[in-house]
Length: 409
Image (cartoon, rainbow, N blue to C red; front, side):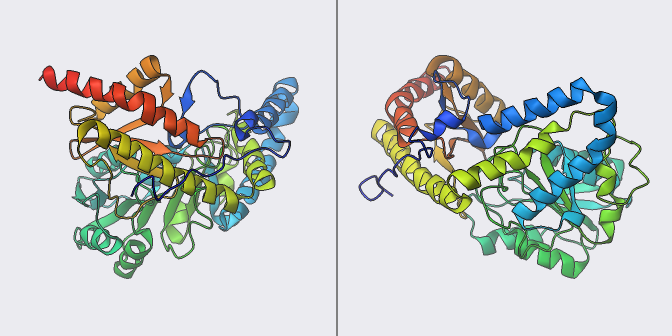
């Protein structure tokens, strides 16, 4: 992959001709190329949520009795956007909360084995480990090479199944390695064996249309605050089959007697305005550019960004910094960092913080099998110039930091 073959896409604009970024409140001091971690909320959704909060605070006694009905309307709208059944869709604060709901609601099976992968999100994997300890069981980790094909990844996961397997936890898009996993074929094989499957689709809403088509899993969770641009604290939990009736919110409330998912609509005095404003974000993207066009732009921009950043590192080090992620994601990519950087998760986080402080860069750095990576992510407000800044200004600095780290060894 070279920049000679990949050209920069034209930056998106608003209908009035302003840059797309004008629809967000992102500061102009930093370069924001890490949408995949914490998202970014359009002004129109921020304003909607602020209006809802004002209504809540102006008349709380009138607000809270009507809140379950408002949540039901919001999740119905969100479910339709995702192409899933509203009657199987509950609202939760984030993907990790959805995982915790699944872990605390499953019937106990003493000595059970839980299958995870080495690409899993840390908090979700740690939750599976706690569940296994409570059940007196164990966690089996499927080790999948970064460049594994769909078939190879499938085989590595299924190889960990046994007669004792009571749950499979698999990411649809992996957070540390920015690749897809074959959740469709793994779910099909698990179902054939009677094994429940929990799919962590944290990054998926907004990136892929109808993400559950062809995926016959028992549980699925997706964050709306990432590529869906919803206010933070808005995610969906899908439960299907008889085990869905066992799902209960993490907080016991007056909704407990209701069936799934209605029991999740009633959560006492929690501020659930993020749920109610989420459809505003989804509609804003659709009405301004159309989600199909937005995804195409994000993919083309990621292709360009990946190539120029990898080439910049190669020019500096003489090594190949392109990464074969096996099943690449449209708007999330990895570029290998110079040796000496982000060799562990704590080191990756420290590098992220240093980049904010010294380079004005809001970016993501990850580690997999002891190798550090820069994880870029694109959205409609990003432009080629954002990633050209990284290639021209940040790559030289990161090279210097890598040499410093190696000298300190």
